[in-house]
Amino acid sequence: MQKIMIEGGHPLKGKVNISGAKNAALPVISSCLLTGGWHKIYNVPDLRDIQTIKKIMEGMGVTFREEGDALLINSENLNKYEAPYDLVRTMRASILLLGPLVARFGMARISLPGGCAIGARPVNLHLKALSSMGVDMFLENGYINARTDGIKGAEIFFDIPTVTGTENIMMAAVKAKGETIINNAAKEPEISDLAHILRKMGADIEGEGTDTIIIRGKDELHPAEHEVIPDRIEAGTFMIAATMAKGDIEIAGCRREDLYSVIEKVRAVGAVVDINENGVSIKGPDIIEGVDIKTMPFPGFPTDLQAQFMAMMSIAKGSSVITETIFENRFIHVSELKRMGADITINGNQAIVRGRKRLLSAPVMATDLRASASLVLAGLVAEDGLTEISRIYHLDRGYEKMEEKFRLLGANIWREVN
Ligand code: EPZ
Image (cartoon, rainbow, N blue to C red):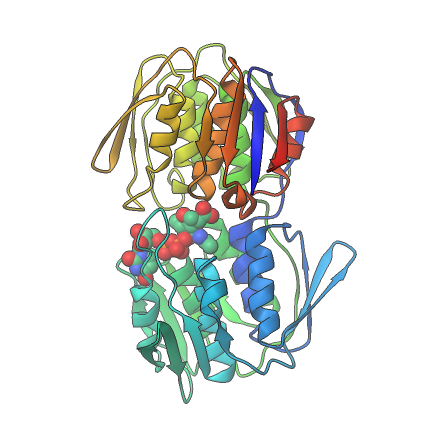
């Protein structure tokens, strides 16, 4: 098992380059199932989740090749339609293979993703929408068995603006017979990125980034070239790190339009943020002000930055209330932060954080992807010694070379294999 070691107290200075977005790359790679031929995808981050989806798709007969900094994908010779349990259980986003498989081949057998640390993570909205498009599904031995004689366009209404649910239906609809309207669609930048590659494949799609997406099905699509957008959650993680660790850094390659809610909140905390065409520069304050946040669907404050923001509020002047509205169990990092001296009380979907002067180094355990990021940030400011974070395979799912990037900014952080 690997662990990350951090000696806190080193201010962050310099420039960090943001990698491609995990949550854009996953649907973009899945969409390459929709048509044979060589797709060329740039800026795919080197992450465990990307390795996982490649493994699942290779098991179906999809060919991957690296060409320079591009990932080439060809699903011409696809001969299996199954995503096996042993891989799906390590990455729930495998559900994104369901839509394109039934759109192209009329069948799929996907292990029903289980829950994870942050919640039950049901996919009922995905399945309900697909069945209204003429896909028959039944559950057997923990697998979703899906078949259709032809996907039909339908009017969909999502009770909740589900991100991967919207992406699944977009991919199912681009080859459907007729028009599909997705109401209460998710508006995350990753949805728009998927719409962009689908349009490059020849899909007739409009409204991405709004509540209503309209897709008119096409018989044939063709391979596309595409560059994945930068990872706004990685960028936000570094913005929070700089704010809490007296940083003065430039975050290159991120897009201002993805980060307005985060910029507003770190400015309220006291950071000085300059936006330029290459990204954002951020200077952390001497005193961190306590600021409340409430996670919301995009463009609200992202749930994927809630744990990181809580680590920062743990050393704020005054208190803050953190309200988590997206997932029912996304406070697992609280107990680990408390081991480092944080004063946090959970009350339903709210965490009341009373800022302390400092956090104290300690051995802690990562429990999920973004919780592990919050522990790294806490370790950066625990000046009294060495913080040791175990189970960092969680971190490797969604952050590319995180400790290297922090080391280049002046942090004293390294990985140990024990
Ligand atoms: C995506 O997950 C992201 N993952 C998550 O990022 C992110 O936290 C989440 O969106 C919210 O922004 C990927 O894009 C791969 P949802 P997703 O469907 O699509 C409920 C990370 O750290 N729901 O928008 O699974 C659900 O339980 C990960 O990178 C249903 O009830 O999230 C949740 O409460 C973590 N039924 C809410 O909707 C459904 O059928 C939003 O979930 C689907 C969702």
